[in-house]
Length: 353
Ligand code: SAM
Image (cartoon, rainbow, N blue to C red; front, side, top):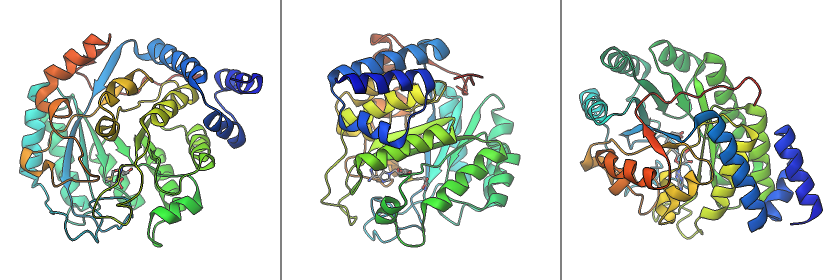
């Protein structure tokens, strides 16, 4: 580790902000010593705010229909091999009932951009969930919608919204998505979500095709400026029925390095140990927690649809990725010194991060 990298690291820890060029240098010149320093600081910060608590969310994958055609995604519109399904409101409520009994106090409704889930239906569903489980939070992850739609869903009771920005580099965004999608629009949706009052999450894939260290540095700058409440960071994993079928998968080590950096940029952030990380590395979840992740999102979807929500090849949905195995997750976390807590797990906002 050079003196200059040491100085940049000290500046990051002091100011929680760097230039894009400085972020890029940390990424390109990273070594084991730098990673250890960042991890220690990230863990210290997380501990100061959240102690040894790990929050859980029950993930319900409500639809594999999607009008979008993102080049990396297994449920993209053009994948005619994808088995499409959508859950009925009754099925979603039954997932919540099961989740509540297991101890989940946040339900994440995620899906492709499926017009079937219009505002009226979703508002009814959110209201019913909140009436039945007033002590629970509802998180939505349903892609780009209008400002009016985001408002209506918030007024119906949704608490949080996850919308990964995917990449903060316009040119890179254009190589991952068809022409009708843009980083500008994604960013605009994120601004609207925040302004509406949601706890808002962005995030990106690590190692997606054509990604450069500069693009990742721009992601870090975007996170620093946007100040999200949550940030989903997981490796890209190829899917056999997409244009990126032959592309290399992202890297677990770089993903964890970014988790630690993001924690230092925004100490109170909620950072999930993603399923994608668990899929590419055997102890991916443990590595993420040890790089300061503090959220896990086991799968609560009905068993018969889980393999159909195939975003990338070999996506995990059993074992401790399954909500039914919460006890084994609790045990695994306890073994490394952490405690799974059964509450909403809201962000604990720090005035001065
Ligand atoms: N439609 C919603 C949206 O666009 O935000 C939610 C569903 S979308 C499938 C959820 C996330 O899956 C995306 O934001 C993307 O980062 C991730 N994803 C999709 N394909 C992936 C792949 N091949 N490897 C890793 N992550 C992927």
